[in-house]
Length: 206
Image (cartoon, rainbow, N blue to C red):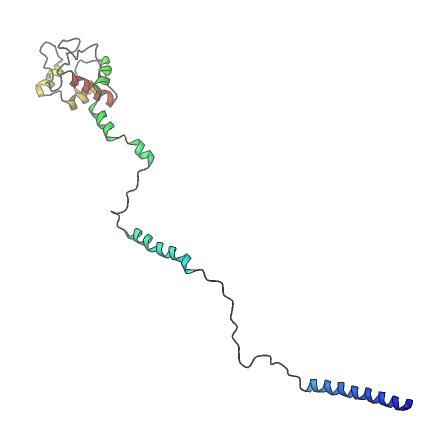
């Protein structure tokens, strides 16, 4: 085979290959499928949603709500009474202590009576500067016959003054005010407890 024949064959192959590539490129361009900008039928896309909390976890809160509502709607009479503040409770002495203070303490009253011993006996019927006070509870004012009372005290006795606990309390607090013009020099006891204690002592030696 001559050289010329070989050249012609090679050229033919190259031309054939070139024609194949050109035809293939034109076919791809002509028959290329362009995707539409918008799909003819819209396809819904599922959106991702946040995970929902489990119902089991919410159950206790839902069950607690009716209980709180019932407690709020309960009548005031069924609600437990609020405790008084600690300061207020401390400021109020117990009832037993209040009764003891009102009744007085005879032993303490005997000590307080030391202020009166210079002028009065309480445990025997004997006068000093003042009349004896034994049996004074319930006794009429100016009733000790062996004692010389002031005219003011005699007048009170004539009016019917009796030494009750209340009258003694007022007299021991302010003798000159309760019986103006009497000759008792003592100014009186300033503390209510001392007065209650002295009265308790006088009652114990009736």
